[in-house]
Image (tube, rainbow, N blue to C red; front, side):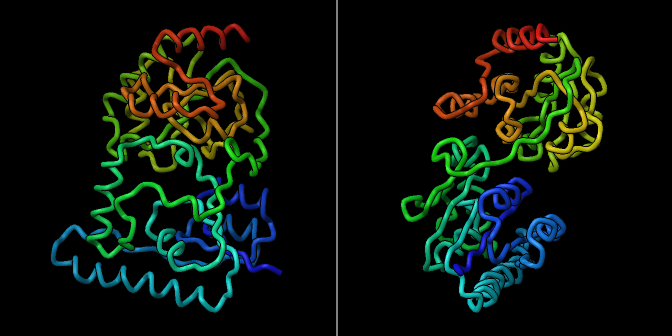
Length: 318
């Protein structure tokens, strides 16, 4: 039997793994909060690797933090070496741990879809380079730190919409109700959009919509800040629990689904009722990236006119 190790980082990755390679031998994970999901889907197969220490705020802490992070990678290699891994599955190609494993591992490597960012570069290369420089200075794995993409020619690339050799079961959608779901992203938290610009776009959308909107926050969004932002905007309110996308749409029905940018619109498999609207929030680069992706199954609004037409058509389906 081939010994297979995979390094998923999210619920999406775990679902892809369970649907396409349930016989994986070892499921490597970094964060304790994913441990219950790993155990539920792959009982007894989880191996906790921990993670690097974040860059120190005080310069006095830099040397110790740098040394600790260098030791972390050595510890990971020492723990994995005895497992005899023959095939490695990763989902993120540009992160330090995955880059280290790809350089260390001598066998075949499969790069599985991470979501939307697997297909398109949504943010500037300078953003990734700056992030990589800070990480490398803090002892994170440095080789390739300034690049967003790995050398895919040395990997077997698998995904849902281009190579089409992965599947993901669609969630069961609740019966549609006369409302729309806006799916949030951590744009403010990542410094890509200001809170006021996000509120401006949401206000324009709510004003143009014939139906009320619910805002489903991303797990990395500040929920209290989102709630405060939505209060003065008419016809939009926080989405009710549960907040996990699959559980939420199974419990609450909607006529349509909207996002600035979100992998969730790919996962719902409701392409006839979904719309990307990055330009509404001033995200011109993201708009161009999505417009240039030939395999994109989700409609893309070129501006407020497209949005208004889509909203009207969705409202007419009542």
